[in-house]
Amino acid sequence: MRFQVEGKEGTSPVGTAVLYIGKEQVGEARIRTQPGRFGVSGGGIRVGRSGKVPVTGEYEAPFAFTGGVIREAVVDVSGVPERELQMELAAMFARE
Image (cartoon, rainbow, N blue to C red; front, side):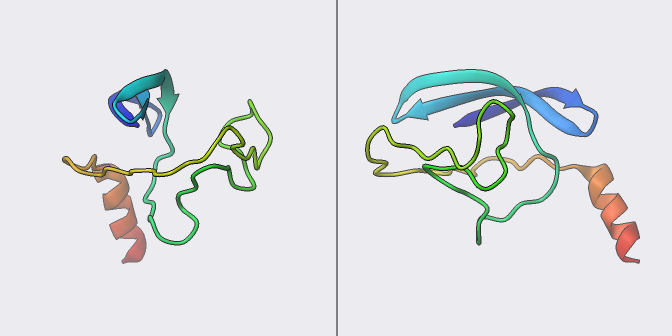
């Protein structure tokens, strides 16, 4: 997946997400992301099913994938990270 930030709705970055299988583009949609910090350990990333709470009201969790075999999922976090300086500053003051 590739996500290009195009603006904000409140504190949430919005833009176009493009989904790929291999190098072939198979989907594209304008999305609003969840602001905040996330980790990739624990239950942060799921492939093939959703968690207990769906990310949208358009389906019911867990919505397991049944269309074949997922052989590989790649999460590429290269590039310059998007920083939310106002949120970082608020977090610093909250810790003081």
